[in-house]
Length: 120
Ligand code: FES
Image (tube, rainbow, N blue to C red; front, top):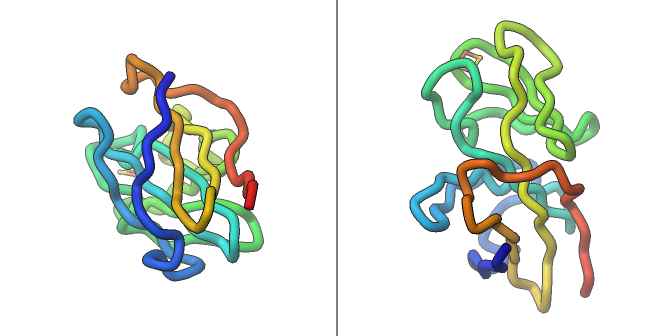
């Protein structure tokens, strides 16, 4: 596991997602107010970037722009068809205004630890 500082929280508008690459793996970082969430950027249904999708702030979900499946930002679980498999979730936090995401050494597997923690 290693932590990666991806940039300033202020660079992401609340209610939107941005794509980052960590060790060759695409990660969609979502900001909702002062909390951040990080999930795999590729939909589990097809090879589509989730960071291009709409963020549902109240539900803490992101909607795939291709077919409309939504994914829980805290668990990665799909909440609407056609996707049936979860996407990886990465622990994410804000430290001194910077977004920090923890990625497993084998980043492709991710993990299901909760994200959205703000420590300062
Ligand atoms: S590609 Fe995401 S739901 Fe089909």
